[in-house]
Length: 543
Image: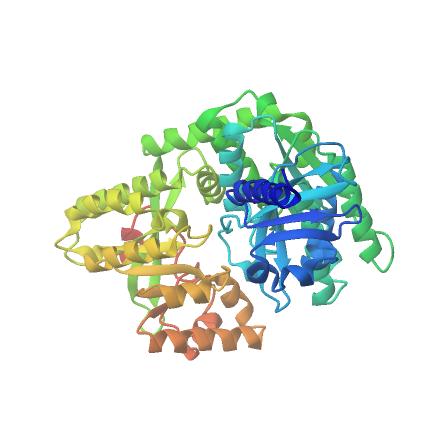
């Protein structure tokens, strides 16, 4: 065979291997021992904004975002022992500033001059449920508590030996206030980069805010080294050189003794409990040493919620909502009271939401409210009552399908039942939520958006949803008498709602002075102890 034939044959073999490689990749890279590009093929212009010639000799570190550099270094160093790493999502940045995530894996070949051979593929986008601007996270692949719970449950179905780790930087919120916003963001991005570099595929890390984090990782990942790296970075950032104490705890599903749906439910619950601020029932020391007891407690909590829901083992009480100008009762809010508890069932509701059992409980409350309307007619008084529906319920298509048949009993008097959408948890699908709200409104039921002003998406929800009533969170009302800014905000909210043909309700009205302030701000209705505490007998208010 002549030289030309040999070269042609070698080129064909090369092209054949490249063709096979491109079946799984959008970009192929060969790096020198110093991590500089010596060969590249694929969508170089689209991804990097450079030609092949321009990329030769450039370090791969210069093609990725600054916070991704530790992840790239971690990926490459892990290959030198002959290991082919699982794909990691790395964000590349082009010459024009365009950011493109690539899923990287590869192989280190010592016999070929210690070169690295990388396969890069554009991955499917992973999006957390909360808006990117509200997360203390760098990039779309860092989860919030809700999306992380789903990711963990799915991941551990097929990877039971992998670890779920919780990390908490104590007093992080107060600590971060020492710095300006740029320094806070830089520290947050650095911490997230460390987490992602240790997480499965670099897209299984979560930031819950206030120094709380989670990640899924392989069993051999050194969590102590990870937290030491984070601790060192925090200490370096601290102008006093002190840093913060870090707590951590890891579990493996294979060691937990749970499986299937119970595992998904328990893990999701643990994640939500950890993400909550100031939760006395959940701490990392307990998790590290008493997993079976925690799981037993979760199971017991779930069983209790199911029992109460199925047996309607709760009562309803009523609190009046009053026209602030005329002092006439407009309607009543229905509040649930668990039979074996005293006071507000806030803990019960939160646990039901975290365990994904709130939809059944919301339906049970609706059934009881509808039965009450049927059993308590009045010719002397207008009896309109409002029931609470969790954001998790209204954003679930199956919930509204189950609710609407129950409302047929009220088709001749739909004004007797209103619905308040509470924002104690995030709405999973705003499109479905709005469709559900409009389905209720089309049947003649008014819809109120509760807790306005405290949720991350309040203004966004007001733009997305057509509603009849807006309930302003009590924190604004409580502070209004002493804080002129809160008063201006109340006035602005009331004016905006008036233009949107939406009525307003103020919570936590405790005295006449507050009532007059709300009247001056053009708020329509008020609710609070000044007008009446919750009572199981509605005639108490009518008489």
